[in-house]
Amino acid sequence: MSKQQQFSELLGQRLTAAHQETADDLLWQQLQQRLDKKRRKLTLWLSSAASLAFIGILSGLLYSGHIEPETVAVADPVDSYQLEKLDVAIQQSIIRNDHEQVERLIAQRQQLNKPQPRTYTL
Image (tube, rainbow, N blue to C red; front, side):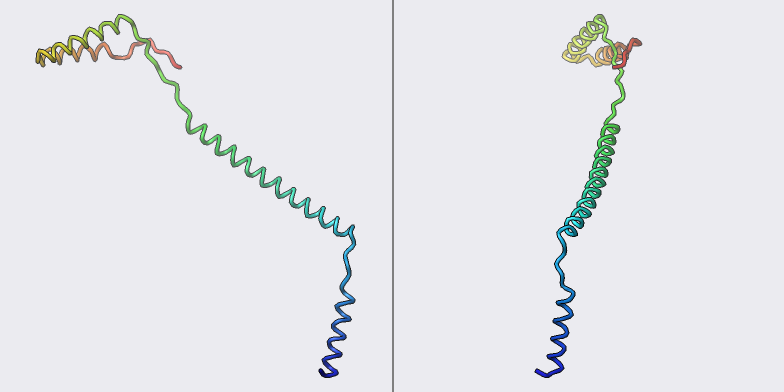
C-alpha cells in the first residue's frame, strides 16, 4: 500500500470519527413525540374521512330505499261477498261452456273490483 493511500485512509477515518456522535436521549424523545403527533393527525384525518364516507353511503342507501306510502282500499264485506258469488258463477259457466255468460260475469266482476273512493294512506 502506498503512502498516499495510507494517508487517505487515515484522513478518512479521522473525518468520519469526528462526525460520529451518539444522539442524546432527550433528542430521541423529542423526535418520537413529533412522529407520534404526525401519526395522530393522520389517524384523525383518516378516521374523519372514513366516517364521512360511511355516513354518505348509509344516507344514500336509506334515501334510495325510500318507499312511497301505499294507498290501500278498504274492502266492503258486501263487495267481497258479491265477488265470491261472481267467482262461483264464473266457474259454473266455464264448466257449462257458456262463453257469453263468462264474459258478462267477468265484466261485472271487473266493475266491482274497481278501487273504492274510501282510501287510507299507510
